[in-house]
Image 1: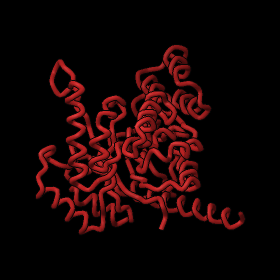
Image 2: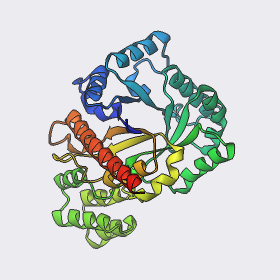
Image 3: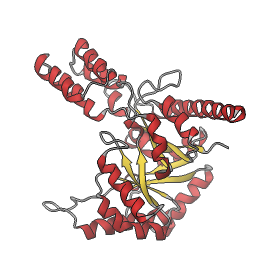
Image 4: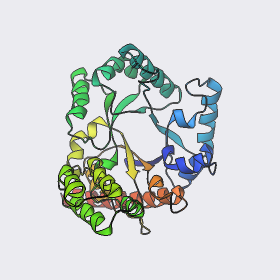
Amino acid sequence: MSKIQRGVSLYSFQEEMFLGQMSVEDCVAFAASIGANGIEILPEQNMPRFPNIDDAEVARWQDMLERHGAHFTCYDMFLDTKLRKGETMSDEEQVESIRRDLLLCNRLGIRNMRVLVFVRPDILEKCVPYAEQLDVHMGVEVHAPWHLEHAWILRTIEVADRLGTQHLGILPDMGIFMKHYPPEFRARFQRQGARPEVAQFIVDQHEAKIMCEYTIYEVAVKMGGNKAEIAMAETLRHAPFANPRRIKDYAPYFSHIQAKFYGMAQDCTDPTIAYDEVIPELVKCGWEGTLSSEYEGNRWVQDVMPVDSREQVRRQHVMFENLIARAEATAQAGAAVA
């Protein structure tokens, strides 16, 4: 069995769930049907009674997962620091909110908790004793525009190293490996009025990895960009391409990946995210964990066509199977020669 497991975040099906076209159980059943048995949950979205979850509801979730041969892999927490108008949660309230999530995580049998990137490292340090007691790994989401070597991310790693804990680390979002500009973005901005030649300029700038502020200035000032063109250029601030070869250096700090994608081609390849470079690196370093689909293309196409999250997720898992198998075969061949 491969060390890399496959799963799905229920976030991937938000369009169909919002429109009443799929229930939570429909999402779980579909994921399991394509071999993506690991389920990443967003309790605030997927549990109507959150945070007041009783034992009966926990049992219902466990029964549902068992019926479909699925299991939980990750719990996505949120920290409502501005819950009260005009004031921010105190440090003590933030710690208590995270402790509440850790407790529910443990009750659900989940060992990975996604922590939003804005949560301060010193707050998380205070939560480590609870995470260790409850055996839950707190992974700070490395989400664009942050990246693996961003100072803010490294602060969390420094805390984990100093404490010598296995219960604090990171959780990469694959949007940080955006090698090519998403076709879905370009098409949406052109529908909103971006001129094709300006859109092509922005795509070319991203392809050449030109600093985004230069591109924004060129479009807004020199090219007299309209609203859609400037907005398209500004997306480059959230379109980094981190070096896939560096992921091995951070692999000890995570066991779950949010496998972000915006759209899969009909041949089951991703035209945007460099999975063909990242997955071989994960295999080479012996990483063990779950690739959890996170489809975000819905918001970019919903104005022009029905969203089919199931087909998009299915295609991504065909790609995962192919890339993992190929990378593992290459690694085994290399080991045999050695």
